[in-house]
Length: 111
Length: 114
Image (cartoon, rainbow over all chains, first blue to last red; front, side, top):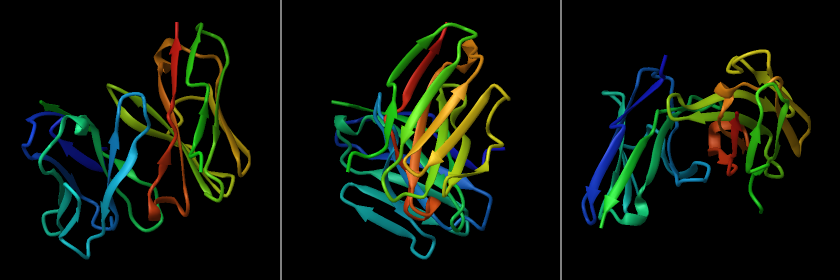
């Protein structure tokens, strides 16, 4: 059973546009929600993370929005650039337990 | 810091052969994870170690897979005998205190079994 459900599977955005990737979870014990970015031939790398005590976290052009009541969180990439083209994974964990990853979203930013 | 180091980067082997993948975690990290990534199944956790001790190997697909961590700076994932369906990218990741501060992944080993 997929602990974290991610959508869409793939996304194509024009340069300068906003990319939005969504994730949903059921386990209310989850208290850590990171996003990972993976370029071809590389391992996933931690991009940004949020804990449920805040509803939003922003780092540069990347923002996580968190809706605790809906058990959803999303990644927004503002002013998307071709260099942002990668696969993005959401994940969730509780306490010091292991991360559960979503299935990934392949983002393509068209120049 | 050199990050998590995996070797080899690419491995092509014939069905039935033994394959050994290697990982050197980041110094000081006390948790190590082996993942398998395929297009069909995404990132699958195979096994993880905490302080060199295997904690959960429920993700290991079959008895053909085994993993060891003889010390804090080295781990191996072995497949014996290998099969074509084992073809995937295998990632090693390490962290300090598991998920509290995120994982650092290696660059992976692309395994092709023909």
